[in-house]
Image 1 (cartoon, rainbow, N blue to C red):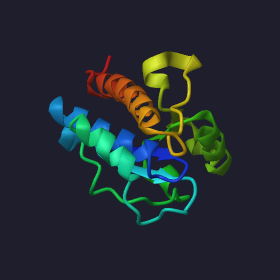
Image 2: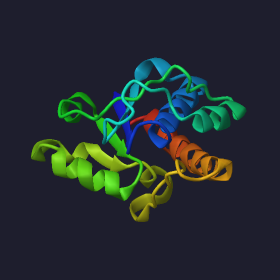
Image 3: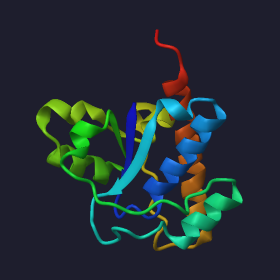
Length: 156
């Protein structure tokens, strides 16, 4: 299964979600079953590593984001990935607008897995301080745990 995490520029929330989910899948013994990637709606940061604050806050909890590099969401991603996870409702709207109609069901809000249909957004910490990065990471950990539980569960 191929999963893509999407945020604005692919330097804060989506690389954090990719890194946390990757670590949790590995801990659960499922790392070989999934291909994970992340992307941004915009191309401002293409080729850049995640924000240094995201790297530091994730590393403090045992997650390594340092090898990731930002890339922009492409039209082909909608067909190439089984599940595209938007970090907020604005991202989801933009993705649904760009996605071919038969593939729209692949787009979900990341926090739906932890919070259900009334899921909230993972707030963008970029213009905030370290507490904002910690808050976003708290939400990402909760969402990633719920996602991994769902993906690792045997089919009904």
